[in-house]
Image 1 (spheres, rainbow over the protein chains, first blue to last red):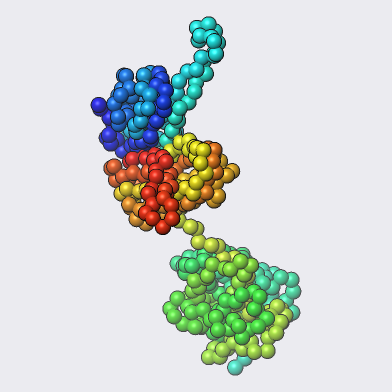
Image 2 (image 1 turned 180 degrees about the vertical axis):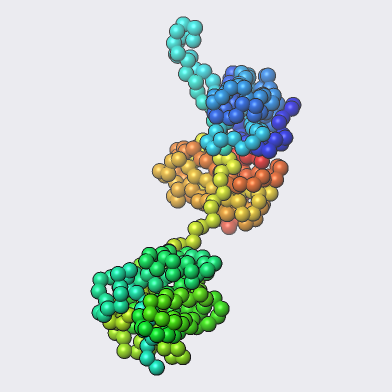
Length: 133
Length: 306
């Protein structure tokens, strides 16, 4: 899988452990950019295979400012464990306090109702890691 | 030899009349200055009607100029001496007369000559002082005095320094303000990573550390939690200068069961860090009873790589 690697003057990659626990779920993994300059590149990957599709966001150019979000929905098997990596690469040092948040979560529907029935689904955050510039 | 009739003013309104009145501790003629002046004679004559005293900078060389005006009708010559003193010791000259400042050329006094009445003399060769960072509550003064050439000042009978200055117009007293040196700036933040820490059901003595890999010496690292209620001490490492590029910097803390907090760790560096250099925040504890070998159990490790 392609990752950004260091190609621009400003680069970082953050890695954190992800533990699914005893219940496999459909999990949404997203990268939420705040104030990251347009033209920067972000990416996400996991060290261990298992989820379908893989937890992987190919290097993606940030196209909107100040907010930009990209994500995927993945079926994660029970007891899955892996380090998850997310990266940022910029041509120049991004503004102070700009950030990239890696968020993993699932939607919990209201008890006894389906989302389509009108009840608001609640996002349950499983993991949230932010790297701020 | 008699004292030269050269006035070192106690204030801008001082014309030499005695006794001098008002505040006599802000002489415009004992002049602390942070920098060397190109042409001190012209400069300090041209601004004789002004008080151009400056603050001093601690721990670096500062320059002190002394000027005076000939009140007599003919040639007046004298030697100017300069001392620094703690204000609290001014009434005890034995404690500060050893603090004679040397001139830039290495002399313990500067000789001046004024040809005629009204002439202004200036120490072209300034005195040099590298003042200390004052201890809490300490303040300092400079004392400049002109005496007959070839003689030395005599303060042996002085027990009330302020009164002595009021009654003698060959002496100038300047209380100085010493600015502390500006600390080197902490580098700007390269990045900060934040994640949620959960202690779980067991209270433990935890080790929280930043494990550096190829992080430049001189950069700074720190970490903190947004929840200080519970852990003892708080999960906090103040900005710490990296001395070993592969070093580990951290704390131990007793963390109660059920504790959660958002922990941030940051890397402060203005340069470009080496490729693949990294900092990992590691929370761990030691497992094992008694004196037997203990095993490090890592609870969480979050790493940001440059």
